[in-house]
Amino acid sequence: MMRRTSFFHTIQFKVIIIFVLLILFAMQLIGVYFLRTLENSFINNFSESLRNQAAILANYVQPYLAPGNEGQNEQQIYQELDAIINNLNTISGAEIQVIDSTGVVVSASSQLPRSIIGQRNSQTEVTRALQGIRMNEKEIIDSNGIRKKTIAIRVGEGGQVYGAVYMVASMEEQFETINNIIGFFMYGTFFALGMTVLLSIILSNTITKPIKEITKQATEMAEGNFSRSVAVKSSDEIGQLGEAFNYMSKRLREALASNEEEKKRLASILSNMSDGVIATDDAGRVIVMNRRAEQILDLTADEAMGKPISEVLGVTLEETLEYTLGQDVSVLLHREKRDEEIVNVRVNFTAIRRDEEVTGIIAVLHDVTEEEKMENSRREFVANVSHELRTPLTTIKSYLEALEDGALEDPELARRFIGVTRTESERMIRLVNDLLHLSRFDSHQATMFKEPVEIQEMLEEVIDRFSFQLQQRDIRINLNIEPGMPLVSCDPDQIDQVLDNLISNAIKFSYEGGLIEVTARQLDQEFVQISVKDSGIGIPQRHLERIFERFYRVDKARSRNMGGTGLGLSIAREIVKAHGGTIHLDSEMNKGTTVVFTLPLHREEGAAV
Image 1 (cartoon, rainbow, N blue to C red):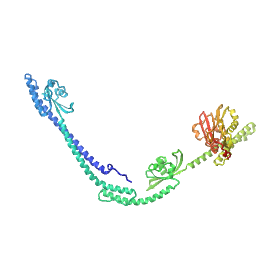
Image 2: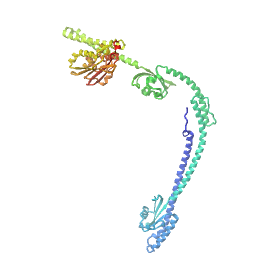
Image 3: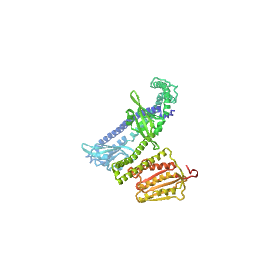
Image 4: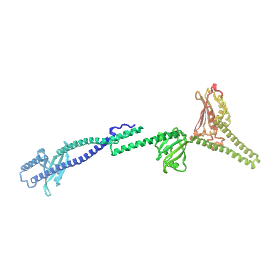
C-alpha cells in the first residue's frame, strides 16, 4: 500500500519552491546590483560635492593665508574668514576648520567650540595636506556611531603651502535615503513573491493532478486491481503518459497471470528438492534460494538476496567465473556455521545462456560432510593399521631372514632374534585385540557384566600389579581415597583395563623419581570421580583435542618404541562411555598430565546388567 506523502514532499510543492526561488534569486540579483550602484552613486555625489565645496573654500581663504598679509588687521582677517566659513556651513552643514601652515586652527564653523581656535590640528589628513598633498579623504565613525566624511585640502599655489581647509560632514542623510529605498524594494519583493506563489500553485496543479491520478491507479495495480484505467484528457506529454500507462496495465495483467502459474510450479519443485539451489541474475546477485540451500549454508534467504553469489558461497569472483565458464564446473567448499560446525559442500555451477550471453548462474549444493568424514576416517584408519602392522612384520621378516642366513647357528644370537620376533608378534596380537575390542564397541556388540565394586580394593590391586615397574624407575605412587566411598556399578575387567592403561601411561612418561597420584572421590549423588595424575613430561596444548583419537600419538616414534599401539586412550574412552561416564585429560608441558573419568554409583535395583 502506498504511504501518504506530505505536501512538503510533493512535486507541486517543489514546483512552487522552484518558481519562488527563481523569482527571489532574480530579485535579489537585481536588487543587489541596483542598491550597490545607487549607494555608490549617492556616496560619490556626496563626496564630489564636499570636494568642490572644500576647493571653493580653499580658493577663498588663500588670500587670507598667503604671506604678505602681516600688515593687515588680524582681527579683521579672522572675522572675514568666520563669515565665509559660516556661510558655507549654512549651505553644506559640514564642520569646517581653516588651518595655517603651522597646523594651528585660525577659524572654525559656528557649531564647533571656539576653544579649538589657536590649537593645533594633528589629524592625519591635515598633516598630509600641509605636506603638499592636494586632496586627502577618509570615512570615519564617531563616538556616537555617526558615519562621517573628512576632507583636508591644501591651501597654496605652486609648490608653496599656506595652510589647509579641513571639513567633516555627516553621511547619515545619504544612508537614511538608501535604507528607505531598500525598504521600498523589499516590499516590492514580498509582493512579487506572493504573486509568484499564487500563480505557481495554479500552474503546478495542472501538472500534478494527472500525475496523482496515475499514481492512484499504479497503487491499485500494485494491490492486484487491473480493471481500472487512467482517464486521458489531453494530448500533451501527460496524456501520452496516461495512454502508455493503460497499455502497460493491460500487458502486465496478461504477463502476471502467466508468470504466477510458472512461479508456483517452480516454487513447488525447489521446495521439495533434496539439494540446495541458488540462482543469480546476469550481475551474479542471488535472486532465488531454496530452503535446503538455507540449511546447508546456515543463511536465510533474506540475508543472501541481492548479494553476489561469490560472497554467499565464500569464494572469489574469479573462481566463480572459472567454475561457471570453465571445464571444471564443480568445487568442494568448507563452510563454518554459526555453531562453529564445519560442513563440506559440493557445488556444481551451470551458466544460464541467452543468445550466447550468460544471463545468470545456477548453483546446486550437495552436503557431503558425512561422506567426507567417513572417507577421511576410512583412509586414516587403513593408513594407520597398515603402518602399525607393517613395522612389526618388517622387523619379523628381517630377523627371520637373518636366522635363515646363518644367525641360527649362533645360539645366543638366535635366541635374541627369536625374542625380538616374539615381542613383535605379541605387539601385533595386542594391536589386533585392541582393534577387535574397538570394533565391538563400534558395532554395539561389547558385552558388559556390571556388578557392585569397591573402588579402593580395585585401585589397590591395579597399583600392586605395577609395583615392580614403579620400583625399577624409582617412581612413588600415592592413593587418595575419600572416606566412606560408596560402591560403583561397573564391569571390573573393563575398568581394570582403563586403569592399567592410565597408570601405564603415567609411568612411561614420568621422570625417574617422579610422583603419581591416584585419587577417588564422590562427585555427586550419581557419580564417583577417579583421577590419575603424574608429574611427567606433559602434552602440548595443540595435541589435547585429538588425544583420544585412534592411533593418535603425540610423539609417534617414542610411543612406538615404548610398545604403545595408539589405541589405549581410545579404548578407555569407549569403556567409560559404555558405563555412562565421562573422561577428559588436562596437561601442561613439563608439569604433568591428569586424566579424570567418572563411574556411576551402584543402585540396588540395577546391580546386574
